Length: 187
Length: 141
Image 1 (cartoon, rainbow over the protein chains, first blue to last red):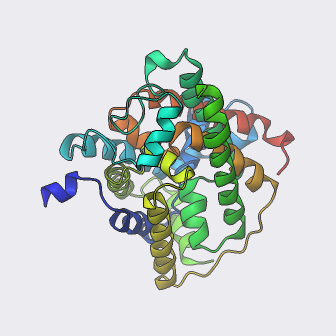
Image 2 (cartoon, each protein chain N blue to C red):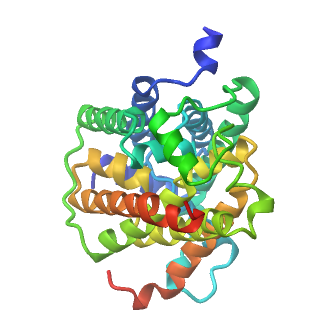
């Protein structure tokens, strides 16, 4: 039992559990979505003069900020109570492709050669953390949703706007993977 | 007015709405994200290289269960057509997803899981969200 819980959970366990968040949050009176937390955090900390950040963030977004703080605590709980394998059981083809790009450390959940404080000044680290992060924040607010709000909730609602956004997610992700990464990693 | 707006209206007006259920749901979500390796940059690479079914299985089964759940709750489809914001914003986020390997949920979970460099990703995402808000009036929607 413990072994099943510490090992990587299969998609047919994880996916349905994530999908359940949509009806559960609906019963709590809210709509599943994570990226709006970025807006609420800006509204709470540095609203400036932008109309986009001038609203009652406590009543509209208080629950969402608590929710994402919960996600962070969930990360703590998973790491301490259910420690994972040293390496993701990565598809050999993906591993080979990443090795061609010059990555060698496959330990943990993210490559230490890109996601580490001392990689901030490197081209790859700066692109992955700073430019990538900026695009996540800018893009999700521009599109009005991310994987949770558009891909899961929106598609479950059969919302065509979400289908458009998800097609954009994939177009961007494919471009980043097949053009940007080889460019910045020089592979 | 449907049930959701009812609840929302009563919750929004008062500060008495209990918030702890959202904390618990968030914790559960965070645990699932980490244990299914959905938070892993490596898994996102597999997905965008079409070399593993894992992420597609997670997303497709999540959508299916969400759709069934909505149906059982008697909710109908939501009509909203895509517009410029969805295409352009979606593509911008996709570029960021491919680079960081993490959408917003996983970013929080990774920080909690001890991947402190993702604090940089989160701060950059906040700057990105702020920049959108600042220039929103001049962007095509």
